[in-house]
Length: 115
Image 1 (cartoon, one colour):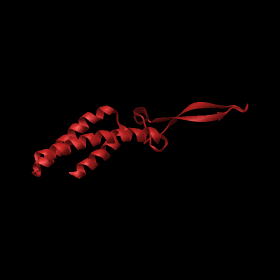
Image 2: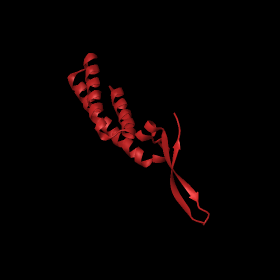
Image 3: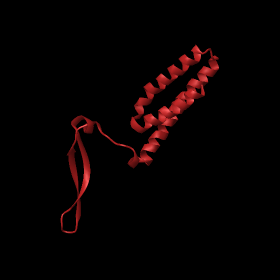
Image 4: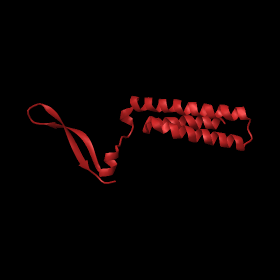
């Protein structure tokens, strides 16, 4: 049953890196159902199954918080992609243009690319 606690934590971290908080509702229900079903199928005691299910749900949510913290602390190392980028095939970036007068200005660029 320790595997469920580990899987719950890692799953929470991965969900925290990519999704909003509402994903925790179905993820928690799914993990609790899986933990309960496997615990009952293996003939575990009721109290062990309940404690494992609660522990998995708690560690899933704590892992989500850790994933959110990672997302804020290390944004440069994580790939970012918005729905608009993948839907329309454009990538927006920020470029720096030297206008020759000694002042640089920031411009927004659109680069078309295909996947």
